[in-house]
Amino acid sequence: MATGQPFHNVVGDAALETVASGYGFLEGPVWHPYEKWLVFSDIPNNRMHRRDAAGRIECVREPTRMANGNTLDRAGRLLSCEHAASRVTRAEVDGATTVLASHYQGRELNSPNDIVVATGGAVYFTDSTYGRMAYYGVPRTPELSFQGVYRIDADGDRLTLLADDFAQPNGLCFSLDESRLFVNDTERQHIRVFNVTASGDLSGGAVWAMTRGEGAGAPDGMKIDSCGNLYCCGPGGVHVFDPSGDLLGVIATPEMSANFAFGDEDLRSLYITASTSLYRLRVRVPGLRVF
Image (cartoon, rainbow, N blue to C red):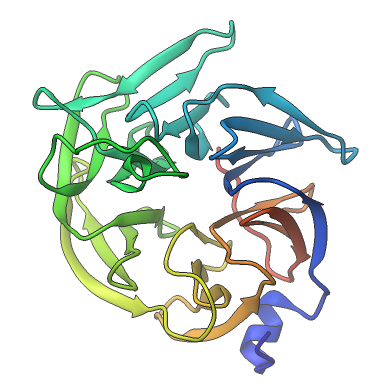
């Protein structure tokens, strides 16, 4: 872990704690700020687990259609990106499943990867091809010729392709005021930034930062904290950038990190899904509630 003063002021000096281990490949952690639980996906084992406020972990969904990224909408309902089914779904209060997106212009999506929800309710997600590969999904030929970033309107009536010039789009997050959307590209090892228009469309898309370094890992899960610092998985662990895109330091992880979420009562626990294990790090600057 880097030890520069700005990095220390954001992340602190707490030790990384192993919360649980023995999984296949963990992804998609999301913290419910009111019910006080953490949900995360084990992609190859086709399960979703929940850790409650007392630290108890139980399987809450099986099968999951090899779900990857998860988030909560403004009503607290769980949204999931299903690798094996190539769709975005919403878990309803009564236990039913609503399919929010599965096809674009009549062709099956690749394999939705990660997902965020804007304040107004619109859903943004990335659609890479990792869920069409063995172990992380079901091998099959893509029907689309590109890997894109999409928006589902708040009413669920329309799916809009926002960008199609990625190699493998993956993690995404909004700026604090939601005027910008950051999207990383795993294959190209960089983070891009887009302006969000009044209609919810995207413009721009310049490279904002690179994730360089030694160790296993590449751009994957990405979040912003309450001071506008951007966290992104990358080589060696979780890379932390200041609001201008300068690298503050790297949170080293013993396994390749894939995603993370800010949780616990004060949103100062960084829960990291890193391959076979779930880790926790207490940080100085809290994260943001997802709703």
